[in-house]
Length: 184
Image 1 (cartoon, rainbow, N blue to C red):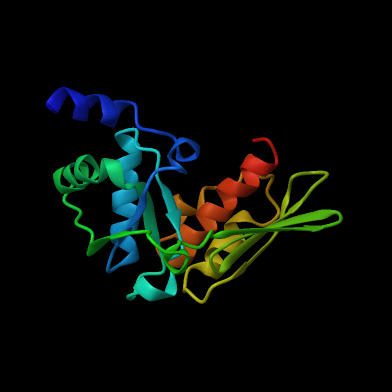
Image 2: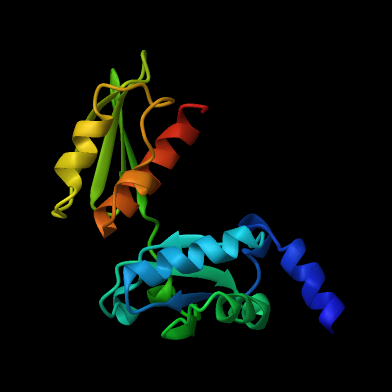
């Protein structure tokens, strides 16, 4: 059994391959726990997705981690070794419990706006320069905007490295999605 756990941990299923399998979500009390859990799971090679929680399980934190339930025990062991414990694991057994995709993209002609949760980053599609950062209400949003606006997407600082709040984390997700959509 330990060998199978090792194989699963080192070669987990990609999200596309788990769509037919039962899925679950890890619910956490605080955003900082989600960030620590995501970091630990990705460092071990797990293919997980951070999503918005369905209203039925929202309990303070605006994020959950979607996992394949078949991998639950191994994932929980990984988290335990990292000192992170989810509040609960909820099987996604009804359409009402499906997590919400955090990303929304809007083509504004010359500009591309990517939204993750409550944060938005807008890119000039021709120059790939960040022209606006908006949203949220955290104290580091003006600082993040100051450091990022006017810089090429490829040279802008990573919000996760310079931000320290849920807004900074959400902006990181929008930043990564914008980079992906722009081929960076």
